Image 1 (cartoon, one colour):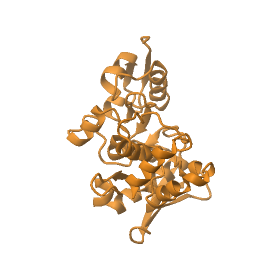
Image 2 (image 1 turned 45 degrees about the vertical axis):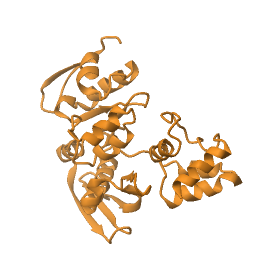
Image 3 (image 1 turned 90 degrees about the horizontal axis):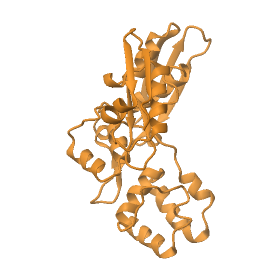
Image 4 (image 1 turned 60 degrees about the horizontal axis):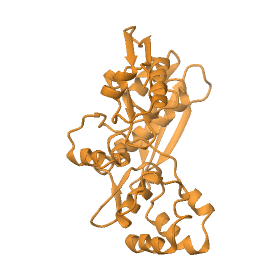
Length: 278
């Protein structure tokens, strides 16, 4: 990898110099990070004036999965509050699980109308597969303080929409656990096994695009039963599908699955997945 480097001043005027070697050795969660990913991360840090050594931004990489750039929730909030047009915010949580919702309203001095975002619990809650019941359950943080987590999701989305240049297109963590070097042995074991997506969900709360609709659009009659089960169990992202496949068909490699994974799957294997989910 070339010795790429950037130099810039952070928000406090402190001079920062980052090299590709720094990123690979000290910042990225995996040394397999590509030159292109390092280049993008270096320039994102420079453009946004963020310091990865202060854990304002993370480069999360696991084996062959694409790198994810995650900014801490506190960094986003701080950036918004430091903007000269910031004029405060309000949050409100209503209802009980599973019908709970959170609304965040962010005000700007230079706009006539505030940015108002409402998020439903069902669309925001992070889940993991319970290996005993084979059912999805909320992650520990979403189980112990769902109102607080949902409130932060709504506020993060509202802040990003109100101040789109604050953190660019990086994902924002709404989890309190933002330490790459976590001592959580279960998370470390998942990382060691080569599938860090669950660690991302647990540790960072980084969201990904739902894919169930894409599955359903191309579904053929023989696969509708499987899609119905996936929908019922709210298995609606590639990460969740990957987790199911690793349990149902453990002898195969599911590290690089795509949205059409079930379209290309033989009927006998589809039935194995269905039986596993029953």
